[in-house]
Every structure is written in C-alpha cells, then in structure tokens.
Image (tube, rainbow, N blue to C red; front, side, top):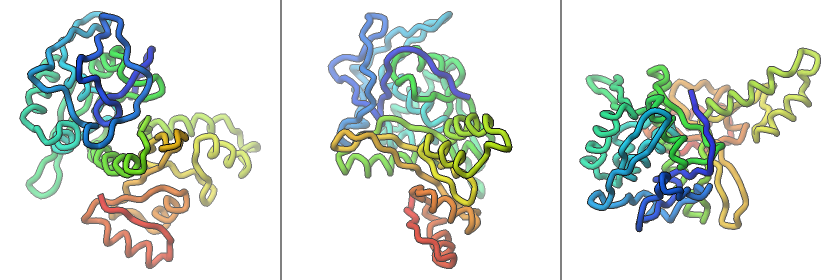
Length: 301
C-alpha cells in the first residue's frame, strides 16, 4: 500500500544531497526543492555527523515526533523501496556504520515509525528486514522530502515478495552507480506495484472489441513499455534519471531468479529490460539464455 501527499519534496540519502550546514526545518517554513538529483558517489551517502544531528520536531495531525535528520533519511529510504534488508541499509545508506544505524532504528521503532521482521534466508539463517509503519509513511509525506509523484510504501508484503523487494534496494545501488558514472542523476524510483496498478487501470478500460494489438501498443507506449507475445511485461524496478545533458530517461530492471523459465526470461529480454541475477544464479541463467539462443546479458548482483 502506498500513500501520497502534498507539497514539494525531495528524497534523501541515495537520491538527494542534504544540506550539511543545517537541516531543513519544516516548522520554520524551509521546504526542500522538488529535486532528487544526487551528489557524486563520494558524497551521496554521507549523513550529517551524529554529534551535529540534533532531533527536531515533526508534526502529523495528532502527534509530534522528534527525529534527527539521518533518521528521517532512513524513513524516506525504506518507504521508497518498501522493504530493505538491515545489512544493505547499513552498507549503502550508513556507509558501513552499523552501530549508528542500530541506534537510529531503535529510536524509530520506539516511536512506531518503523517495523522489522525476520524471515528465513536459507539453512539455519534468517534475514532481518525493515518496513515503514502507516505512521511512518504518513510522516514521510508530511515531511516534504519526496516529490508528489514518488510512491511511499508501508507494511510488509508476503514473505517471498518481501525478500525479493529487499533485493531491489541492492539492485538500485548497482544501477545508480552506473548512471552516475555516466554523469546522470537518479530522480525517481518506480516499483512494479505502481507500474502494474497504472497499467491495469488502462487495460481495464478496454472492452473485448477494443482490445486490439494497436490499443495494447498504445497503452504500452504510454507507460514506457513494450508488447511482447501479446502481453505487456512489467519490470521489477524502474529508475528514472536525468542524463549529463539533462534529458529525462529511464531504465527498466528485472531481478531474475533460477526459477525463471526460458520463455519468461526471453520475454523480459525482448521487452528491453536490463537483467540482473544473484551471483549464485547468474551462471545457470546465462546457460538458459545461450541454450534458448536469446541475445541478452545477465549482470551479476
């Protein structure tokens, strides 16, 4: 489930550089610009030093929350991707400072803004995941830190979907480095939930007579997608970005697993998606592509 709100907003951490001199204060009427463009990779994930990051009051309809700038960044990060695994959040968003992350996670949980869940992750292993609560998503919207068009999610999906969603955060980190190395800037993240919802809304408006190949093509084009074998494949993740020439582009990413059948993998490749796989699945999927004579590249996550 996602929530939307009003005001000009800007994502933090992986997307937008935060002011290091002082944190924007909503109660003083200082609103961040509606811009998600990130700093270079050397500074993108730097947070306000903990000693200088004093809590500030943030208000919703019926409650007041006291949050540090870094804690608000964490809420934005988690809400954007719906679910993030603890090790990935510590590494990508806290620069490896797991101790600071744990202190901030504890405070966010105490204020009922963040929840965590442990899921099986293999033999005798478990994975720790974070998601926003409904209060947390409401606060992010109220904070003015993300643009109107950026969906913010709360709550955990089904266990299998939650683990898959958590991997998308890691996938984004890999892809955004490629974008930034070419001089681009990530501006928005779109998960498959949002893409499918918008696509299905347009498809539902077609009756049987009007559901022609031409109509499907027009709907697909409207959403930046393609028709493959009479269907419109949807990627796991879309990253919208500005190029070094300030042209708006997007890249569609698919996280393939060892369970993908050749036909499904081929359709994703023909749709023009960039294909990624977990390291342990990469070799097998490359063989599937070769044996099926599908021209595509599988990148290792």
